[in-house]
Length: 239
Image (cartoon, rainbow, N blue to C red; front, side, top):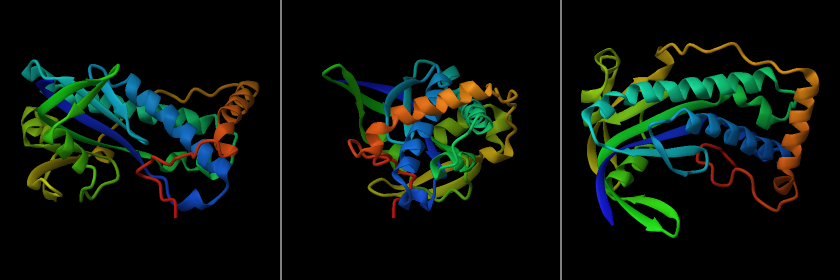
C-alpha cells in the first residue's frame, strides 16, 4: 500500500428539492441530468484524476509533486464550475420535457471541498482506492456550515497557496467535524465570482426531439423499477 501526499477535491452537485415524491420518470430524468453534468465536471477537471463517482458528486485527486500544483487549484475549480454552468445552460436551452426532474435544472449548483493530505493508495482488483484520515476529513467537510449555495471550502494549506486575489476573498470558518475535532477552514462564495460562459448551443427542433427520445430509452430501467433512480444521491430529499 503506497502512501502519497495528494490534492483532494470533491465537486458536489446540489439543489434538488422535494419533488422526489412525484412520478418515477421525474426521478429517472433527474438521474440522467446529473450524469450529464458530472460528465462536464470530469472532462474539465484535468490535471485532477477521478477517484470515483459518489452519487451526485465526483471525488477527484492528484498526487502532489510541486507547490505549483497547489497554486493551480483555484483555476481548476474555476474551469470545472465554468464547464458545469455551460452544460447546465445548454440543457435548459434545449429542454423539451416539462417533468420536475428536467424543470429543476436551473436550481442545481456546484459546491467544492478541497484538502491536501497523506493518502493511502490500494488496488482492489482493477480499481484504485484512496484511504486514510485525510480522505475521511475531506468527506466530513461536505457536512458544513458554509452560508452560501455555491462555494469552495478548503483547509489552511490550500488557502496559503492560492492565487493572492482569490485567497483574499476567502472567509475563515471554524468547524468541529465528527471524529476529527476542531478544524480551521476557509470558504470562497463562488456566486461572487464571474463565470465567462459561451452562448448556449441551441439545437434544431428535430435534434432536440431525438435527444428526448434517447433519454427516455436510457431511463427505462428506472421507470420499470429494475434500478432505483437517485438512490445514492446525497443532495436529493426523498421524503
